[in-house]
Image (cartoon, rainbow, N blue to C red):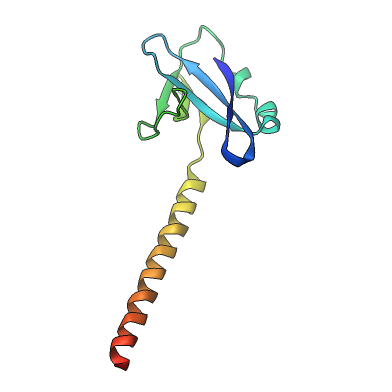
Length: 119
């Protein structure tokens, strides 16, 4: 379990909490954000080496160029949830883009029909 620093587009450096599992060569991680956000995140202190945890990873997340996948969505120890990714922002953002796309399509169809009726 390590905190990894990586380049994040124009915003500079970003951080993730990475886990390497003995069963596989893959590295899975949790996105922590900027250095300040990573420093304020207490997730690393909640995970104790030697305890058994269940990791739920999103298989649709593609690995980055250096091989680690930021796809861990939930970590549990028995019935206790240690970490759970909040997907609400993704659903809201997706809904907004979907609504904008459908709205644009309807406007284009309406404009095309008006154009045909004017001729």
